[in-house]
Length: 418
Image 1 (cartoon, helix red, strand yellow):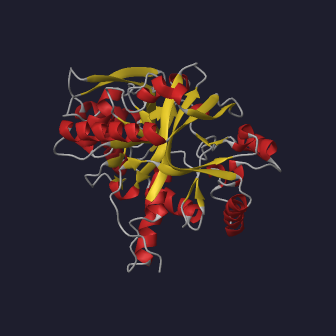
Image 2 (cartoon, rainbow, N blue to C red):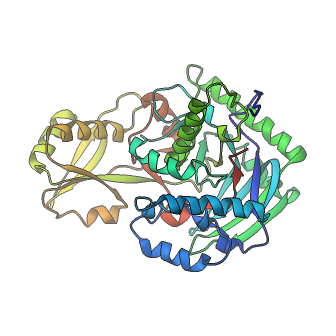
Image 3 (cartoon, rainbow, N blue to C red):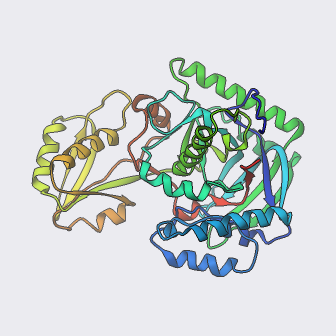
């Protein structure tokens, strides 16, 4: 029996990070698996670029292919992981952080910190006062298929973006000013219009100073919210992190006599971002209710939101338009109140709820009959953490962090089997 004796663990801390070497990084790094799910041509381009060469594309399963995956497909992924480990394609940087800079299409630079999060301190249900929480509702049906891929995998490759509320901009931004003293590990253009990525190793004295800043940030957050434990929020990749949590809980349940407090599966590699970074733009995700009695829906909502004040939410339907006024209710976001009423209405009436990214896409539906579109305001970044504290988790599809090409690319890895 393996001994995983307990020790003091950080909520977010340094990790044994693996990076590919002796291969072309532009063909190794591929975009998060949950992107371009309705555009198989994109993933066909990735296939062509990575055929016959070492690549993270051979270690993941794009979600557009998830439903058609087989045991043989998953077994091939797991064997490729073991093959890359045997062939020493991955170099280890033990007990370290990585400071990274991602240059986006706009020219802005998103600064991040690669480390690992303690899954024992993470909750996605919204019912637990956890230090690390999902920002949005988790769809439980999406987890089991992902568990089939992670279960038995020797490596994890993260596309999780974790958010901190560091208004002093000390945790990550201090590294920006000190990066010339750090060892640069990579600096290259990402494939298929993904922008540019550079990364620096944070170890030794710089690591100790960083850990002290992280501890100071966590202390400030506890002082700010003395009745809650919220320190970090999952901004992107929550279903990936929820899958890691579910697999770890399954592992513990299967071996109740074993101590897993130091098992590598207890943790998950992720990228930490600061919501106060200017590059962090939260785009709204609009709502449209299709195949419904539009007049009844608008009439019922007008009764619910019978107020002359509140946040304006414009609607469009069959060439008509108007505005709902969503009243304030504590720290709850206007979207949370609207979503609550839409969910209630759809349990009693015919209709189908869909989500629209971008104003232009919503405008294109303005004359569609039998539908009502609601134009949501952009979420104020300052309201994100208070909104989670007030409502547990935010409604599903509350906001989007950037465009598809700006999502995280797989580069770093970590062993999750001892």
